[in-house]
Image 1 (tube, one colour):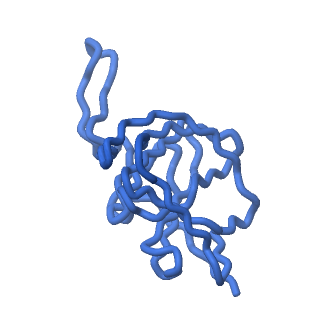
Image 2: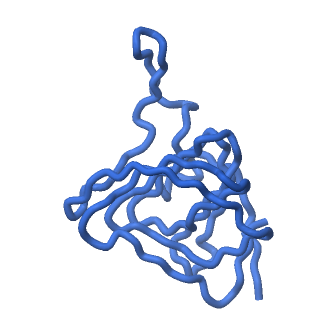
Image 3: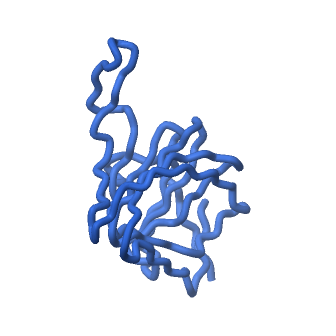
Length: 162
């Protein structure tokens, strides 16, 4: 048996139970660098200090998955939040859930190429889902002692994105 999960636009309100949407729209902003720059401030709360964690800044290049996209694995990070921000203006997908076994708790969002997400600590989410090969993302998350990755394979029904 299989189910299809509908994808809806990513909004701050719809994503709030899972973390922050990172975008310039509605953000606090001010000029910097003698007026040659505009800083958008306080876009997300980086949560990395559990068990003496430190900040990890990295870069990921994602590849598109075969269509239709089958959801097979969910993951979460019990010791810290995780930010993904696209470095090109291409839509991408965000899938979260309350519990991997509870198909009714799944939510799928289409982010614009100008929106990132900050998955809150312990939020189940699918690994990066891009629609174009060579999709580049800036990532901020936790590094340090302790196990900050829990993965759960989705069993039973197949779940696809529509």
